[in-house]
Image (cartoon, rainbow, N blue to C red; front, side, top):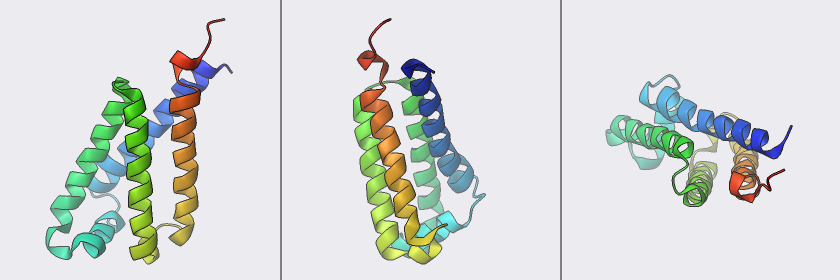
Length: 129
């Protein structure tokens, strides 16, 4: 498998993660735990609309990834958002996370994948054969 193929596969995988967490888990409320996390961190009063807003933003991230527009800024934004969200969850609501504090490991691995895909495999870095 060549690097262009890896890049494409990883890009679709990363997009799928954002789409699943944004649209399915938060906007469509298929995983109520996400709203519970928002409620605990930001307050119960606005948890439902804030969860939907976060889900819409995550769905927007998926669209941005696929668009390829300002790709490196997108990679940096993804890394900052994932690191921030997971640090807050690690510190404030570890009991609500799917794997508890171990979620931080999966977040770190996801950040590494995003970095590798966006800065190493990015097609402009791949030499033509």
